[in-house]
Structures are given as C-alpha cells and as structure tokens.
Length: 181
Image (cartoon, rainbow, N blue to C red):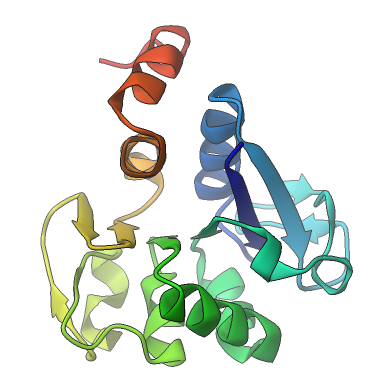
C-alpha cells in the first residue's frame, strides 16, 4: 500500500491539496495530511481545512511519496519549516517521489534539490525559480520529481503522481468516477 504525506499550512491552495488527496485516496493510497501550522488551517480562499494530524506526530520516513500543495502562504510556511525542509532532502536522498504544484517548487528550491532538474510552476512565481530549468508544460516529470502549475492542473498533477508511482492501471481505476475530459 502506497503511503503519501501532504503537509498543510495557513495559506495553502485548497484545490491543490484537496484534489490531490481525494484522487490518491480513490486509488486506495493511504494519504496523511499533516499540519505544520496550528489547526484548523485557513486556506488561500478562506476554506478551513482540518489536517489528519500534526506534523510533529508523524515520521516522514514512514511515507513513500511527499506531495506539496502550493499557495503563497502555505509555500512560505513550508520554506520556513526546518522539518519540511529536512523531509524533502531525505526523500530526495532516498530517491522517493516528491511532487510540488503551483508555488511549491520554490520549497524544493529552498531545500536545494533542483539542480539539473526540469520543473514547472505557477507562472506568477516563475521569476523566483532560479535553481533549475523551468518548463512551460502543465505537468513535468523529471526522475522522482513531479511538478505542476496550479489549481487548474491539479487533476493532471494527481493523475501523474498516481501513474508514475502506481502505474497506468491505477489511473484507469480512478478516472471513470472523476468524469474528466
């Protein structure tokens, strides 16, 4: 059973968090949302989210995939979190899958893991992404790193994570219920 860890913080982009968590859970994954700021979390558009647990209560090494939703505020909190930064570096060192959407590739840049990687991000933060080559594509996969542009690409992002970690058959099991084009 694949286990994914999704950090949540004040200012997270709610669509990017909820769509990814929902899609991966539909595939039978164990997905844990872990708050790195006090709960409940107020997301970027005022939606209040309640994480499954607090970051301090989990062991990141127990997870197979780390998924970082974006949002300006959530991204700032993840950049400033030594625990999240350590988890990113540890996942990278072990070649575990790391996924980041919207502004969250800046969190990966802060962790120092983007050298030589191709990524994508929200066009509004593209100028801040200096440690790597930025692609204009909606979703980019470079080795164990999966990145995407923003709320409108959240389903594509979630399905790319599912495809690259669990395989095409897993995608085929969840897409009929999603009614995607």
